[in-house]
Length: 64
Image (cartoon, rainbow, N blue to C red; front, side, top):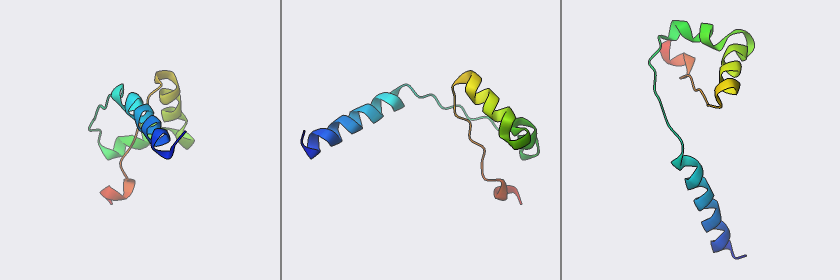
């Protein structure tokens, strides 16, 4: 398989994954983040496992 074919296959696979992706933005006050994340991240890990989603919190330094 040529380099071009490999690149084409890689790009196609990436696009298939992103095609089914949904993004939802929720504005939650930064003081609540630690309650959602939980001790050692267990709370948010449980939510991500149960839902199959990825959850991102903004950099905490943004608010200091």
